[in-house]
Image (cartoon, rainbow, N blue to C red; front, side, top):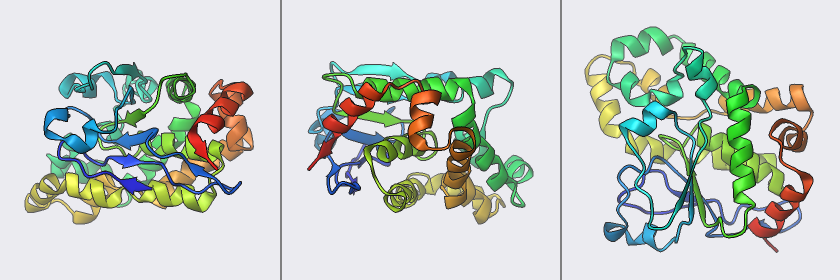
Amino acid sequence: MNAIPSTTVANLRDLGGVPLADGGTVRSGVLLRSGQLHRLDLAADPAVAALGVRTVVDFRTAAERDARPDRMPPGGRLLLADVLADEVAAGRMPAAARLRQLLADPAAAEQELGGGRGREMFESIYRAFVTTESARASYGAFLNELAEPGATPLLFHCTAGKDRTGWAATIVLSVLGASPDAVRAEYLSVNAAVREAFAPLVEGFTLQGGSPETALGIIGVAPEYLAAALDEVDARYGSMEAYVTDGLGVTPSTLTRLREHLTSR
């Protein structure tokens, strides 16, 4: 579970080294996660250039992509996988896709997310990661792409790299055989990096009268958010593997390829 120092990509991490139940680990240098890539500059960022990213999976909405388009590594393949498309089509723009807007308007953020409402809203978003058709299609496409020959190193991201990206990491680590404790640790490990990346916005938010607790709820992740999605998986599918095969449409043979390619023993 390694943070990668980068001057142009926020919250960049290599999932390599996560321990697995069979005694192996996730292979290093093949599975990467981050925030958005709108500032990517390989010439100025040798640590990222050295990763040799071949595929980028973007979980953001169309509005997020239009506002801050990814800068792609040369020759890289881009897969768009809009997790929240169904929510947007229904007239809802979840907080996970409006982080900067909420932090720029403390009054609106307090009205929408203050008094514990933020926790309830994020738990609802995480349940939607499991239940909505667009989310299932997006996470299924992510896993199927990851199993393709030549797809790695693969980097997957959303805006901050914490919610949609955090659930993607949870799925793949779980099916590779990581323990619940290891999965939870990876999920929570992004908090420090996200807070650092959004520090100027949080400072402005509080200076304008916004609650620090509300700001941290917007930019951070909490165990309760992850638990909401995991509970939804258990209720609907009974296990993570059944969710992946029945809900996301990933075949057992694809799972076998993923495990062979992404693990070291």
